[in-house]
Image (cartoon, rainbow, N blue to C red):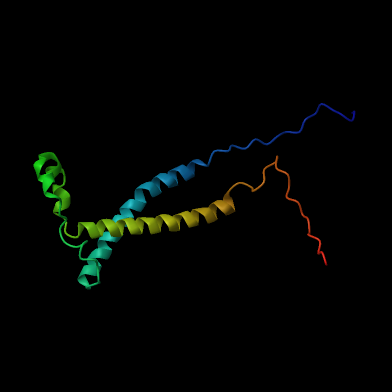
Length: 139
């Protein structure tokens, strides 16, 4: 066998696409986070109203709409379900805040899991980092 043989090493080809389970988890979180945040927001506001928390009075009560919306029967009929909910604005604000918090917590958890189980930091074509110690210079 010569120095330059024609035998090549087998290359391991890895799929760069994420595992299909991550797509399923993402779809599930896309549905679960808004549902959970709305439920938690409604319960939080109801608990706060019962225990006399200091909530902004602008968010409490039935929602009011401008008078010019009464001219359009379609818009007035479309907003009828929302106009009948007491503390609707408070529910919306609380739900959005809780949605942001839940999304942030899940993002941090996902980053920890990805760091542990994700691909290697350096691929086969990357140059390894240099291990150079700096010299102390005295003047």
